[in-house]
Length: 469
Image (cartoon, rainbow, N blue to C red; front, side, top):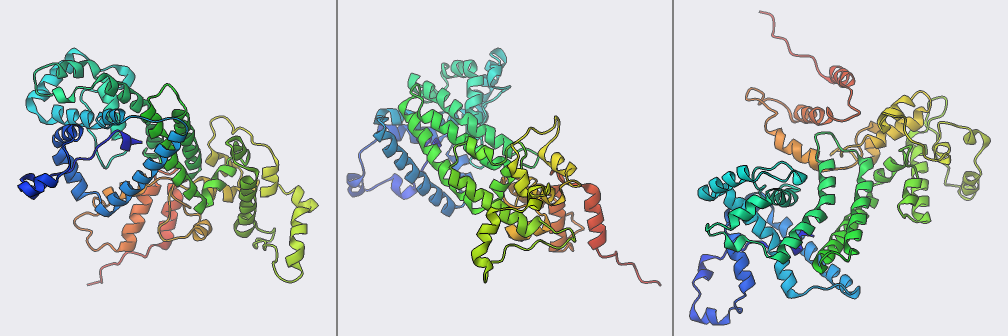
């Protein structure tokens, strides 16, 4: 989506800055739009280039740009077949939007005279609270999600002060928005709002749960579809929204690689399989999820009264040809087995008790349906991935199953260097890993400090004592 509204600054190398007459004759014609953009972006080149050079991996950037370009071209083709196109002039207006906002944010922060003038104007013309409490323009940050949305929000919150600033003779005339650009920036702000909503949900201090991933993706897709069909939006905004939809669809399909995403939804009593029907999933897709979760329940969670694991249906000999008939005709005992995934799914979804979360509900069911509740807690409580365990191993260990968000992992990378004091240089990697895990898990809804202390006590070696003199 943002690729339609942003232009990356490209530093001109010294050798290219003073071309020879022969080289000058072979250069491409002068593009006034490109020249204007490079002048605007040149004001923030130092910060952007430093971030790109020091933090962002060049190989990843190249891969991302290739992927975005492919999606962008596909969106343009598909929307063109629907009669939605835009002119080069409209594309030029759109691509100035974010660079102008970003450059103004840097000017009001780094230029002393401009900053002092803007601060006085903000005191005279306070922020519009509909867009948030801002006193400065929020700068863009290439490594932080949501910085573009905050930049636009702060711009509109301080719109009056910004207009007054740009009307002064401070050399900021090239950052003033045209009427078309002003309309595009308002639409872009609203188009980024659903993305900001998801970003905030998955980057809070509370650990996000895996059962919220598919609903979030589904809502994003619906929002982007609505944008691409909205005839009140400028054509380039509709094409950009369709490109965003195609990108979410690309990553949405990757969720099929892990069953945990689907199981977590099925094991929510207020969702179950009905959630998939309500959101347009086909009968065959839902049937596949049903078969997978039944098989997983029998293989990993269902135990016989004696405590031994219930064996899965045999697949050899005569049983190879008869198991389907047996499975299609459940026994009377299975029909009335409360601690059964089949019985659980035979009942319609029902609301959770007031003030009760999914985890609290299943925790209260452990004495009634121990096998089913154990499975539900294993999946619905999953906040991230155990780096050394596969999905099967994670189920056995009751560890988190898969990634709901990379935010916790990124946060631990940032905090890891502060977790060892100067006098702890002898700490082993295993102890450090355990320390980081406990720190991360302590904010999870399933974390029990008493259980954690007991596990550490039972598994830790005793402290060495000094030899007697």
